[in-house]
Image (cartoon, rainbow, N blue to C red; front, top):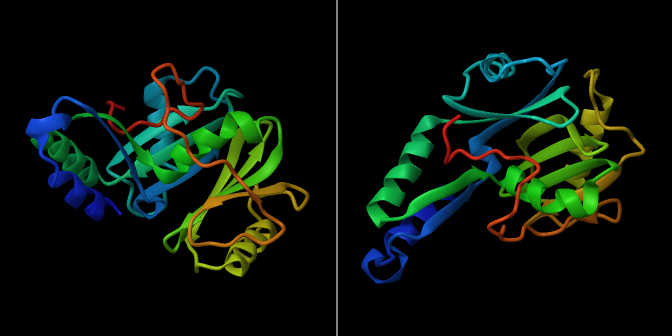
Length: 219
């Protein structure tokens, strides 16, 4: 996805119409590490939140991370990506004379579009699926409380199976079996159990995302 987008952008003639314009980039969730950690963060400083974020990931820690403390002050959303990807995006924007305004994984983009109109106040599982990968989020009262992420075959049964496995795990936070099921994706046909979430809209100048993860800005 990223490679194809870069090739397409590199073919534009920056001298004609795009030089100086803003560039928004969304990449596939398979390139990102997403997680939520719970605790009492009401009095926690930003450096402490970043330290907490580094402890979330098992094995290799992503070399670039962004965090967002959700409004309940108890659930910290963490997004990580390898720094080489950000370097490639910044170099591309610079070469094209563009200003990299916004950059984030697909889950963040899609959640921000669906949140206000569809999922506020609900207990739900929100899934973003496509290109052989899926992110499932357990949502309660507008807060993302837990994330499950991994490879997924391009069929609805695989999505159902992954959800059932997650619900059966001994994890401290897992989706309720009574939760509403919402799907935003491509290449995965939803069963009757899943509702289709709204497609992402292009944000306006005054738009303030509920999940302000933006790798185009400093951490």
